[in-house]
Amino acid sequence: MEMDLAGFWVAVAVSLAALFWWWNDYWYALPFRLHPGSVKLPPGYMGIPFIGEMPAFLWYFKLLCRPDDFINAKRRKYGDGLGLYRTYLFGSPTIITCTPSATKMVLQDESSFSMSWNNVELVGATSLVAVEGPAHNRVRALVVRAVNQPDALRKITLMVQPRVLASLSSWSNRGRITAFKEAKKVTLASIGMYFASIESEDILETIDDLVTGVISGIRAIPINFPGTALHYALQCRRRAKAIFREELEKRSKFEASVAKNDLMEALMQMKDEEAIMWAVYYLAKYPEVVVKLREEHMLLCKKLGDLVTYEEIASCKYTTKVVEEIIRMANISAFIVRTAKKDVDYKGYRIPKGWKVACWLRYFQTNPEHFEDPMCFNPDRWNEAPKAGSYMVFGGGPRMCAGNMFARLQVAVLLHHLVLGYRWKLVNPNAGMTYLPHPNPADDVEIDITRI
Image (cartoon, rainbow, N blue to C red):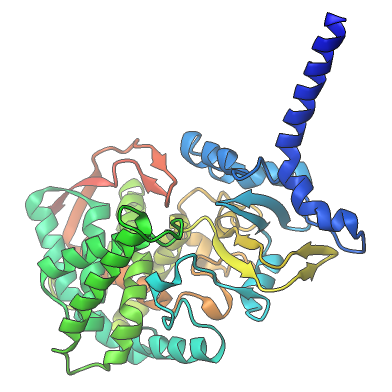
């Protein structure tokens, strides 16, 4: 009798464990089981209640430091022909896309998928990242004219160089610097100067701290009372807006609407700060690339400290390849997120309304089917254009990063002055990597730098 009772409780425990383990899959698949039809959920596993697959995500990204294994494990288990997997991440049922065709479908169809923000008040209800449809098109066109058109890029090229030259000189005077921290200052100064004519280093550092505070609340639990991340982020936004408003009142050269709508977004996206850091990192590891860059830029017949023009930078074909390879290797974001506005069917599978869709862009840049030996830094791979849809570091569709040319230009300008005037080496060439929230060498790229 006692053995039967023990067996009963073992069976109960096993059943409860199985229910716990598969609860998310049962719960979210229930509508499909109750109403079977021609569509079904994509393959995958949705993890345990409330937590989902976050333990596996953190295991690969934070503990093993092998982020690509997270998506590769799904490919091996469920196949990769469809390019869709169901999961549960960051508190939401989620569909992962990891093929160019599936990702393109999501990013280009704004009638079916929206860019979602848990706390839209932080980015601004009328900002470029929050508005949709015709309003988004109008604001985006304004930003593109301000930062991505040839006339704007010509002005930016000349505007950013004094700051770049001063920064490089400061680096060499100190001898040892942390590239991530210093690159962030260069980017922040350029954006602040161009959008709002802000030059004060004290003000820029304050803005940097405030923007970091705003970002910390973007994905926070939407609870606003003292002590919460959202409350702190909203305080940071109010203080930042007060600074911008004061500075904008002093301006006369540019339309205030550009900065009012999009300076915060430009600072929050700052994709080129990481690109500058990775430029210093990879060129230190590949000195043969520095030699080729130096040869190309010496042909411009510029003396150290002379300003280079936009047309001259654009003529440097090898530099263009190096910049693209730096940006590819930087892999700023593992994925970008959209929300399904309605049920969407794709190749016989359904993306349910209200579910998140994680477009796994990192996989494109690290897939050997797209790029041979993808983890090797090789600018010459850009002798040929990448396969269609395989290169999406700036996103895709109507919400592709509006400042992508600004980022490329800033990196190219820094490379020009860096390779002509300086030598540098990594202090910790074998430093490990961290991957959350973004890929980063563990020492933030500490270098020794001197003038040539």
